[in-house]
Image (tube, rainbow, N blue to C red; front, top):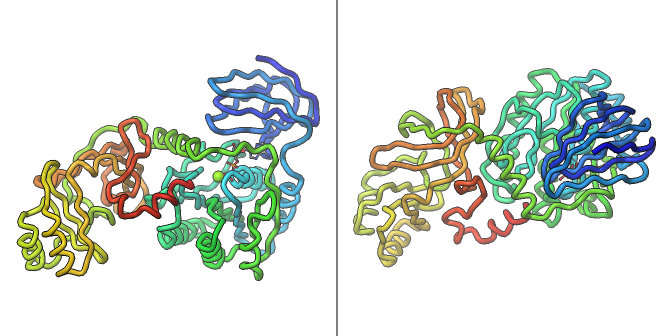
Length: 437
Ligand SMILES: Nc1ncnc2c1ncn2[C@@H]1O[C@H](COP(=O)(O)OP(=O)(O)O)[C@@H](O)[C@H]1O
Ligand SMILES: [Mg+2]
């Protein structure tokens, strides 16, 4: 479909669609599009094609896509002013943090800043701290890369390194998110950037969220913080961060809010991207270092005498037993059963909660794979743990030597949709939080 749009208007395109500019001058998030360049708008994404000089577009749309012409430029003028604040940095590297609620335009604002800085030939790193709606790395991770060319969609970037957190929401894993971001920031700094742009997740409401964001801000000590909001969603956070340099920017009014389901669907598309061309691999458990806080695979049996005692109390020898700091994880056969009375006895004697997992329940757990230098190799999904033969089967596109695996708290079904994990009954409040993202 061809259409001509006058200067001063914006073409809003909701994907899946592809759009080419045949003639005229058009910008997307500060990126000037060359003529005949084809832009893919992903499902669930909306891109504003801002017409600077009357332009003709050729577009084709997929199911549920939409194209709409609106008056004016949908990039708020406060975004342009924000860039001006950055253009004369007092220090190098200059650290920028972007904070705002879910669907406020954080990613788009980062894209806009990056494109503007690239025009000035600055060396820009993006550090992506959003676990649920990650742009640079896979879902459940924090990641970074250097952006060397103007970009329309940060999702098209390839991460330089990734730190797997294993959850879609930060609420229960705050320390891990901060640890990962700090590690990646160190890597960025060793590459001598002019700007480091840190994007964050949209968890900003409530005391815990505010505390978390304050912790992030204090840890990374940004030279400037951009707060994106429509009304006063960030009021308490603003009060709590008085000593930092802050600039308010507007959340564009044309943003279409994504439902919880839509956000899940977007993650599903990302899992598909990161597990494309995957194959099943078998790895002996003894060949890899395992980080796992669910089943306790990385934990050795510890005190053998204690393990024996637990077996006796249980009246059986489980496939796997891990005594962790706060609980004991026991894996038993698919159709096996343990008398609850016996479990109670173990809990009384050890003072720890016993979690029973049936073999097979591990299937689908999301995992990250690393090399011996802890460089991220890619994602995988656990197929099977063979406790007797001590072999792990996983589904992954990674073909390199794997030295370390980290298991997450997210489980994918065969269509790469997120499903319930075992033990969720013990983490009801956690599940409720997950639903927010
Ligand atoms: N200025 C804008 N004009 C039109 N659409 C926009 C604009 N800013 C953001 N969007 C679209 O709104 C949606 C949400 O924005 P996004 O940047 O992903 O928000 P966040 O990162 O805060 O969740 C995206 O599809 C994005 O492309
Ligand atoms: Mg985002």
